[in-house]
Image (cartoon, rainbow, N blue to C red):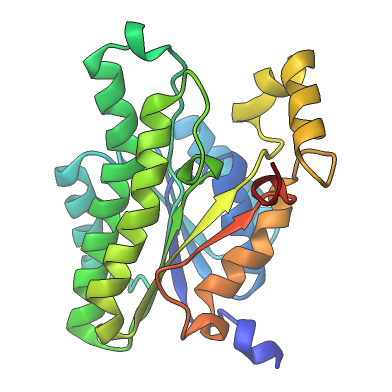
Length: 255
């Protein structure tokens, strides 16, 4: 049974993975046997992440590039081709947040959030899927959604639009790529204790709202997303396609 969840012999590319949830996904997939490729944009964060993984005995490499830059994405995959590195699993985790009421929201800020959170998932998955299709043997695409893939909250309209788009982009990937034995699914994290959310955790009113709105009565932990990620990356999910699994402590289940 355990072989169902083994990622031995597989290579996973995780975007936005030098810190936070991305790094947790990388650590989790590595523990299941995968070689991992990190992505980020800042050298010092990349060095720290790779050093930490090396101490844990993890087979990892890193690439610095902007996931929303088509030329940079294509150049990275070309490098991987030249190094004979085959990407079997993609986790489209890279994302940014920008809080502003829509009446005051600049188009440039709207566009950047959509580019990083939604368009990048298309660019990375397209590059990986082209190679998966060409070589045969299938693959796994895991996009990272959000509670805002289902419900909106004031002041985060671009993020909400992007994460709503992730839900249906995932279904579109499944509709087109399932025939090639590529499974495309998504994870929708609830409120998770990360560096990105620290300001919200420190906000007494918001922290109270999260705890009172979540049936579990607490924030989630990054490592509580790992099981779902390993499941979707493994052969255990070979007939699961176009789905989004919410890991939210029951938040979406209640009114």
